[in-house]
Figure (cartoon, helix red, strand yellow):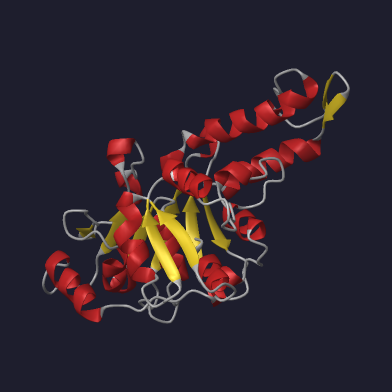
Length: 281
């Protein structure tokens, strides 16, 4: 998601340092290996904060969830790029990965059964309760990523581009797929995001928005249960706030229980994006 942001930043400074968590390190190193002035340090948020405390002379740009505006409902990627002072179209125009066709071909030959042309690429995480419902899947052979096969997400590019259908939760695989050139993908390929799979996050977003509003009105907001105007003390929660809350949930892939089986098709608006995703919420 922040790929273009990093590349654009590296154009402006002689040296840039970013941090990558251990499970993402190999993929991050791979996708930025053509940028000579970029250093990638393995570490989580605590390590990054400690590094900055030890190097107060360094200019730091903090971008992430801690600086999100939970009230406006602006989408996650848009807010990240706004935090960096960049337009969202840089997410697409600056995307570049030097691919390794030999690695992609080797993984394709290993995971896609010989002679099979029609298959689905499935990415979900049932162990963490982010599971895709079987009834939403076609009767086709299934290819799934596994950390036992490779720790580089880009090794799956050929498998993804040649699949009949992609069925993904909202994750790194979905974001990478969205950034791959639409001209490389299989003609007529069906792209599906199963957002209901991360339903529990709906409550987290709701609680955060309630917390922010409660800090102003001194009471818990209950107005999400229906439209209308609800007044708490001297603060008025209007239709505008309620709609922004709903926009927020949808923008992050959160949805309400009653909409679990609704199917929509979203033509995503961005200057260079040319893919359409079917969204199951």
